[in-house]
Amino acid sequence: MARCRYCGRSIDWIYHRVKGKNIPVDEEPVFVDLSGGQVEFITDEGVSIYGRLARQDAPSPDRDVAFLPHRCRAEW
Image 1 (cartoon, helix red, strand yellow):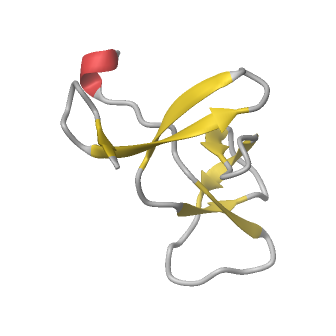
Image 2 (cartoon, one colour):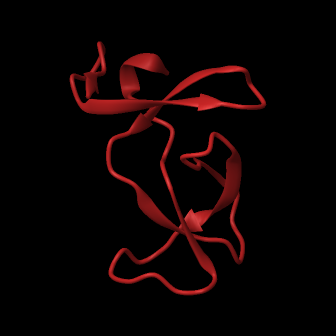
């Protein structure tokens, strides 16, 4: 795993098919509620999906697993 040069947290990189470049993502995957929301998540296949953060206790049919793009205050 790599580390963010701004905040020092562990990150991973996923090649984004549409953007054509590697995107830094948080190390741990999360469950995404696909029934609504406008938060961008990146799948491990390199595709953006939009939804909202779901409860992390168990998967369900209307959820997917993806990664949050890594953003830290130093990059804003």
